[in-house]
Image (tube, rainbow, N blue to C red; front, side, top):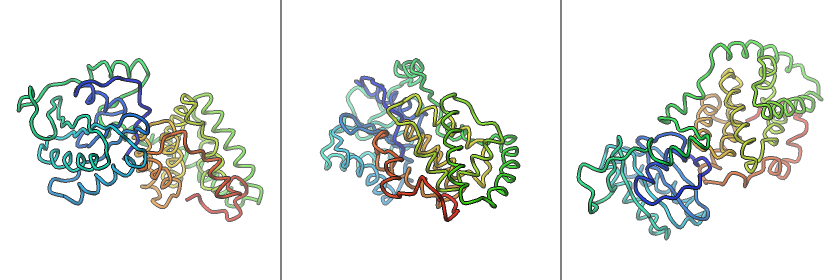
Length: 345
């Protein structure tokens, strides 16, 4: 369940407004999805894949997953959007979620089903809405135009978002060859290696975030190998720009996107986990989930990936978690030496 990008200040009055808002806050046009938009204090937005028709357990699991953060954050108003051609499935999911939201004392502003530029009420009939639906054009809506003005890119699908993390084959090969050499050298590291490497890695990442550039292949190879150390990874993680510094936070996510695209699979999990955190921190929950998928494919046991997944699932607001503070509180030596020489998990 991705937390959406930071919500722009837009006024919603009509079903068309709600349907146009969804791709703006998600960063892509959803299909075969449930989108929950919430409003007021504690608000968040979420997208989830729809369960199969005739899967009551899948529906119950989906409702539970959404209601947990709704209750935790004290949400008072919400809108339910089902992007699907299956009216029966939409009616089932909307009914179950609507009942859950009602029990949680959430005012459901609207419940809609949409498919290929037409919308219908998700449940029942509505005066003035014909059986064949009402046409709408999210791409031509003023919200879409405002997103362009704000520099917010809206992709045509989640698959298009996934494609933004596709490896750059030539770069992966070059970095991989250099990383193998760097890894061999690191295997004979001295006790002071982690301390020196973390300072170098932190300076490298800070400089490239500031300059909006990507490290050259040799430096990138050294970086991704170094991230296999808890000490190096956590030192770099702790210097992620705070969410309140919105532009720098987005720049950090952009840097890690490019690092992941150039990173060989062997060293990809820590870089992808750092991308997941940077994406969540910048308000781009959809990209964060894509990065988690990449990290899980490389190493499903990576602990930082699990932490970011928790932040997303619980709809924790960016800016409310400080990795440096968390590391110093829970692991006093997390930013110091790595005496075990272990790989970051």
